[in-house]
Image (cartoon, rainbow, N blue to C red; front, side, top):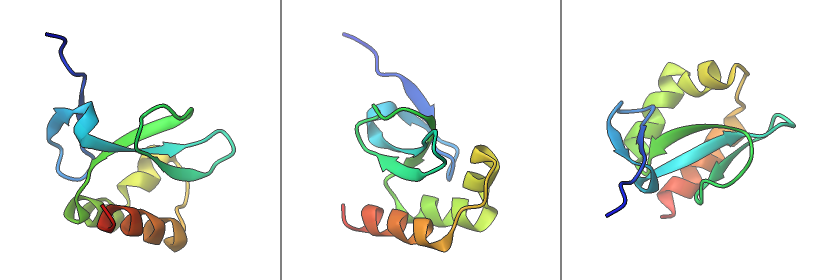
Length: 86
């Protein structure tokens, strides 16, 4: 049986299988978007499909530190919308 790659959630710091997490990508043009398939090009960070983890990384500004850029409230709202709509 093939093992699944493990990734760490930025919110709760738990290691989980890569397919259980959502990838947030910073593309080469500086845009931030969700990558549910894990195939988009760019710098990636992982988060659980849970609003609690998202709120934790928003409060601590962890995404901004990882991607080394200011994240607008619009992007946070779109991330909330996608996670809440699961």
